[in-house]
Image 1 (spheres, rainbow, N blue to C red):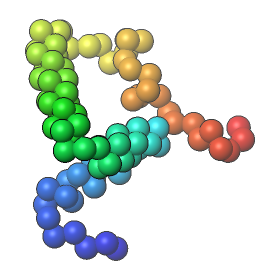
Image 2: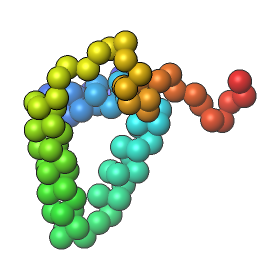
Image 3: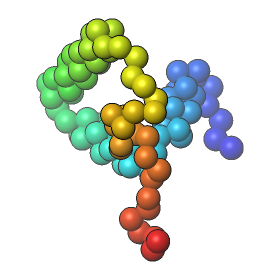
Image 4: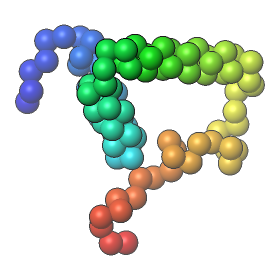
Length: 88
């Protein structure tokens, strides 16, 4: 086991572990681009992420709670993940 003393880091790792394979790839790609970006570009990324998060919060508070049986759920986040490298 990898020992992690920081509660914040442990929470991030647990959240990462719950992502689908596709979401993990998307996260790691974004993290990699962020890590190699200039300080100015990093600040712009953080601003964009904060603005997107605030827009999602505002949008969610104005929308009714979706019906879980509805087909309107985001397919990427709720569909079973298929590994493209393995055969069916």
